[in-house]
Image (cartoon, rainbow, N blue to C red; front, side):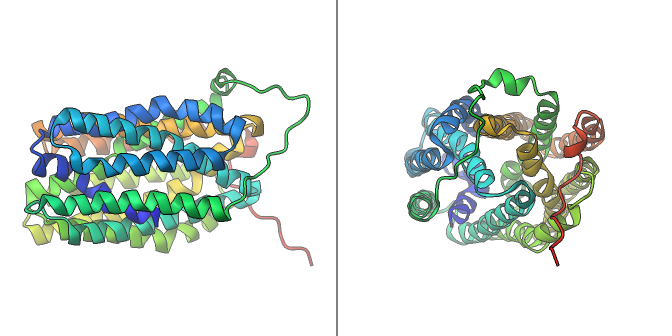
Length: 391
């Protein structure tokens, strides 16, 4: 339900700020990027608090901040107001991801985590896809009030998530040795394999996932694709993930992780090279091409979902799990900060060039995945396979 709310607003924030409020594309990119920059600052602070107070309590705090932040977007009319609201939601996102990931890892055994994180990715994408479709039906630039409905619905879903989580989800207890000291971020940053993994992830998010923020405004302004058609593109992306994520996670069991990320880089590069072709077509043809691009991208997302979060969990020390998850989330937010900020200006200067550059970066990331494999300990190079059932 919460992902449904996020999906309602995700494809349309750029359109709202640019086409409805009249803020320039470059500045909108900076606003969206500042949301991620704030989360970069907030995330490590939440990581410390998670290790002390637990993921459940900090997740409730983050959800409350996000509910308040998204409820303020209808009041944005000037760029400075957009920056202020983005800062609030950025703090919430900075706490949301490490808190939720710590909670999932704490509630599952290591052998269950690939399936658990895969399921989390499935329901998240299902919600986002359905939300994007609903948002495309509700939103129209001719009626600014329709965007108010989107933001308030998203805000409500954060409240619902917090209520359900506090009522039904226990706070896991992570076993620690009595002799273990508390530890600091310095201990985490000295862990070279982990730093290599999150560095690679930041590149993939910068060149890959952050394109989700740019595709809607590109499609609308370059190919006259409607809001409803944009919602359909995101829905098809979701359907592919829902159908393939769990089978891909099962297929990954017992296999090397980094070749999967190498394939991811190739798939994402191919997907982004299709987008400039769509920009030169009619709305219907462009929609079909974008559906194809996002379907290819979705297969890469399934590979990412099967590898990244379980790998971080396997590399993490239990006493520092919150900090590990916070720095993993930081790699996402760093990519989301740089992607829209750089992409917004490049999109304004060269609408097609931004996708060619993103494709090149994804391809480079695919090659670097094999170099990262050499830094991993043997136990982490393959996805754990479930123990065979006893007779």
